[in-house]
Image (cartoon, rainbow, N blue to C red; front, side, top):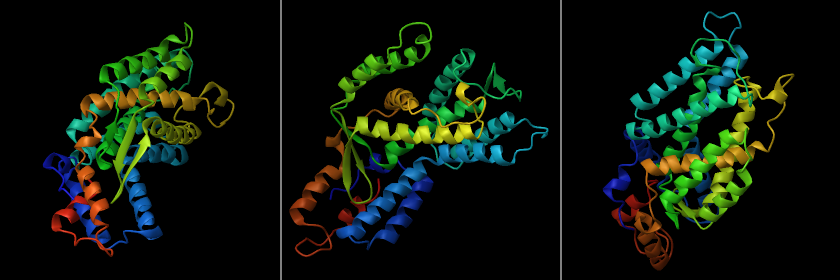
Length: 326
């Protein structure tokens, strides 16, 4: 396999490179075929997804902890405590280099875009927050922006952890038009016709042919990006159910008691994913599959056989280094 280029290696932060070396040393002799090989791939996929979700998972843990244990008569209001905790998580992410300054730019964009929408949506009664605390803008406690930032953090981290590449990614100006239409419709549908279904059709037309290629451990896999958007939307919806149960915010139909969030919100989260991906793409331009360091290596493996098995060439040091996670 062709060794990864230096710019591909640079996508890991320092702590991640150290962890990557340890994991690969541990898995160096893992099976390359059979169900054990796929079990290793599944474990690697799960671990990388968990690592990408570390910001969101920390935020969700804080929200649940505040729901269960924060005293009502505490000197610091619960919403203010959540804001302080969210800010502390963000500082730790950057100072420990779990998140790069470049990624922080994306997170700040998500924070700003999300807070603006939160201010509007609470004004029109789409959802509401408890009115305690002073760290707020109007009816919106400042921790709410970090919930959107958690989505941005996940996307930029998953982009590099899985070495994402795209086949037939649409022109960026076109994706920007679609994202702008989605964002504007989140506001205007309260006063004008709701265009989410025509916009959804536009999303399918623009992104329908795009395929995402990603590397897990040894294997490169692919998936239609619309499918990926849908899967992420499902997990955001599940996190939203936990958050509303924790009284982080409340929808009107939950005022008399908690109920699961309507599955219709999946459509909103799916459209939010389009905005999210477009924002990330302006900081991390989508890389084509042809530039993938694993593309040539996959051809070599098919020709030479899988290293370590009968009929294959001995693996060179370069080959071993190319099977790294990314």
